[in-house]
Every structure is written in C-alpha cells, then in structure tokens.
Amino acid sequence: MSEDDLEDAVETFLTEYERAKGEYEQGYADADATLELVETHVATLRDAVEERGDGA
Image (tube, rainbow, N blue to C red; front, side, top):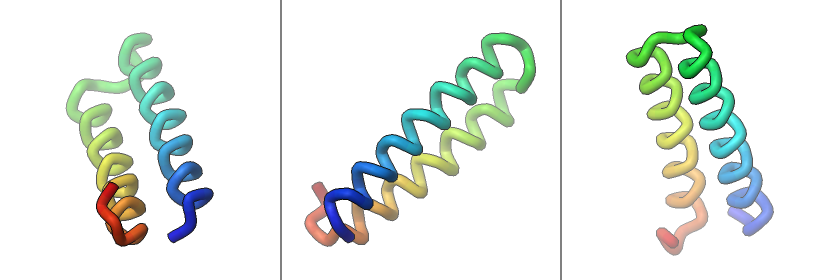
C-alpha cells in the first residue's frame, strides 16, 4: 500500500467520523448506529495500515 492510499484512508475516516458525529448530535442517528458506523470505518482504516506492512 502506498503512502497516498493510507492518507486517503485516513482522510475518509476523518470525514465519515465527522459526518456520523454531526448526524448523531442533530438527532438523525442513535448511538448504536453511530458507533457501528465509526467501528466500520476504524476497521477499514486498520486494514489499510496493516496492508501497508509496517504497522505504523
């Protein structure tokens, strides 16, 4: 995995996290749904780091 791919994964995570948090704060999503969404994005980000091969 290239450094650009990892940066894209991080940017996607941060964007989606902010969106999920905003929707929760506005009452559009419940806590369980928001947490599930964030956990999904964390798993994707973790996979991107692991694919990079150095675990950093």
